Length: 378
Image (tube, rainbow, N blue to C red; front, side):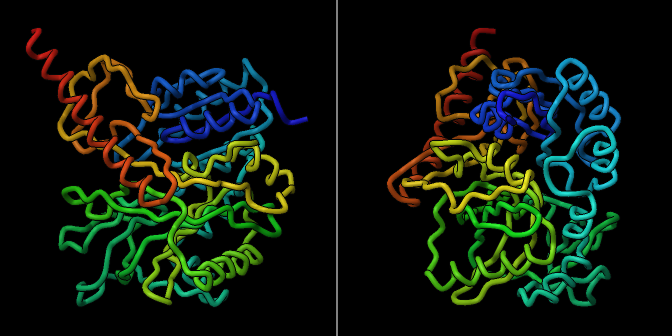
């Protein structure tokens, strides 16, 4: 029986994974880079790992953290989240010690390499934007991406100063951003649902991820077309556990931008009332898929709240129940970095999105009031 077993989780931010694991009856052993209050609350054990702004997770610190966690609580395996998209070699090192509950390193490498992914889409007959590794002579209409990147912060407009390694160029496409949450067992896959995403542009990060709402507003034919694309690709690549397919939709046309082959940013809004996504993820890695997606009767939204200033010391705050990834008092946050996540539900996607935006503004107002209070007290 898988329930009530310790399980390692590793991600840049591990709260959503750990909370879902706890709801499924597992004892999450968490290694992440933030150590937010609610992450520590749900973790059976926790170790913080260093984060380099340019290089991501510190490999040596991560492996040491996992060894410390596993030594005290022998785990079923490890579920990884964000932070490994460009690290198949690191996953291979981890897999030598613990069972990977998720996609294999070779799958990560194939899906996050721009040339191999473009070839895969072509072979599967799935529309995909023109992609190249050399700089176009005319850069208008192109964007620059980092190979292995995730989220929108790595997507930039072309610049003469763009000398970073591991970048590629992709034709910019217009339309609506829609993501499919997909569960695979290595042979087939099912779509758990579709969400619409929006950006929160910042200086030099025009495509920074803002949030997501479900369900996405799709015509039945588009739903069928996107689902068919998922099935065609899942029949070619062995996908295990939770994955997200990021599409761009323009009228009756669509293209697949990328696949994030691990649990991602929409965990909170797709978490079912019964069971949990983490439980479904582990079961799928064991080969079991549900006959149908869990029912989600209402609408839900999640939004990243970015700091509107540099915060040298986060003040003590009374966090509302709908706030997650809660910063501990005394931590520092750079301007434009994530401060927390806010969640909302509603009878429609429009209502849920309206509420979540209002709550994001309320959090920043509360933060501003606390900072002013502390400044006046000093």
